[in-house]
Image (cartoon, rainbow, N blue to C red; front, side, top):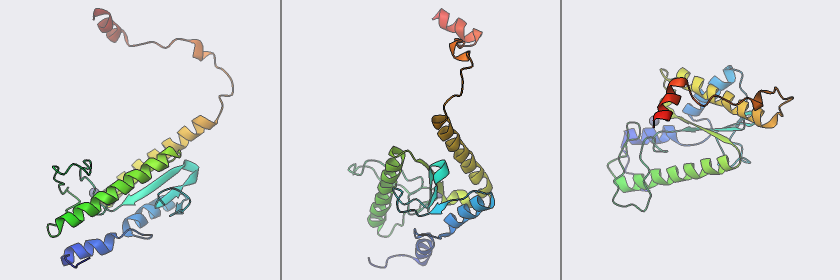
Length: 189
Ligand SMILES: [Zn+2]
């Protein structure tokens, strides 16, 4: 690869290279750990090698850099050459060597999508956290949302694996179809 990056782009490159211990990922790990969540990192046996794996929740977390993973960059079918890939608010595609960067980001997006698909097919829940959601201002809010998703995943696992201990008899009671006002409306039509 020829060196066509501006110092600013290079800096972005260096700080966002995907690998263990990148800064955004660390923020997520610290938050989870300090709130009592335990996890594993880059588990090779899990498809797509997610950044953070939480087996009891059957959840894989990816912490994505906005530039490399094309956050907000529309993903038309790659064959559609008429479509011009546009920069987004947090993924500014360099104007120099633009085609190279577009192709690179598109490949990453494709790979991400494929990883998420394989995981979901294997019964994993996938949570994607974007770097821009981890600014000091947004971190807490983002992680509270992640926490809700985690608990939701746990709940649905519990629901599917725990048999109902006994019948309450309520199953036989027909549920009301709609509120009265709505029933009226249906009758009229
Ligand atoms: Zn972003």
